[in-house]
Length: 245
Image 1 (cartoon, rainbow, N blue to C red):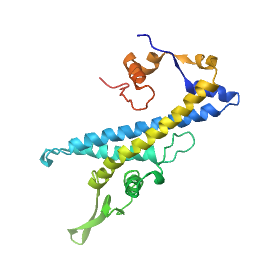
Image 2 (tube, helix red, strand yellow):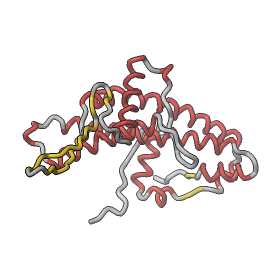
Image 3 (cartoon, one colour):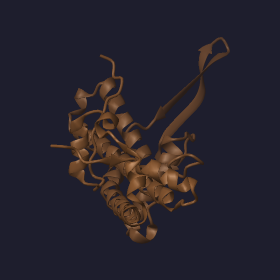
């Protein structure tokens, strides 16, 4: 089956902007932001799914490797959720699609805010002995041990929370809700782009930036996955680049 034509809308938008028409560029940027944030939430959901399965094993099967994987999955899910739904970006950064309190129940907003607090005060930064929901994510003590003959040996100890059941439960509740909200925003923005492209942009401008999708996406299978998705924003696939043999 012959592949249809693909054109680089970002390049089309930049060319139009260079002549003063910045409308499409702004709309493409907004749609891309929504799609990229959806990608963050999908990855966070993947982390939660894998972690949920890992937690089913008996505790006697715990190993340092498995506990490290659990800790990484938990932290990554929290960071990805916050990056997609709350964090602000400096100039040049993507930014987020912030959830609206008005569109959530009070319970959902409380869950959302609690996850962000964990990101800001426990995962992205370290505060000594600061409680979040009555839990110390980081605990440390600097002490000395008497070693005899009037001498003391200084020492310190700390621990960091690798898994927190309450936060994990909040992630499980909020990820489907966040995905729902961001998908709605994505479709709204994609519909707006489609309207402008098909009404206001000349065919010559679109044809000028046609590209080979197989060369861009790596393999024809990836292109067909994208075509099957038909712009719904729900398709994702992994590409391992420069993975060691």
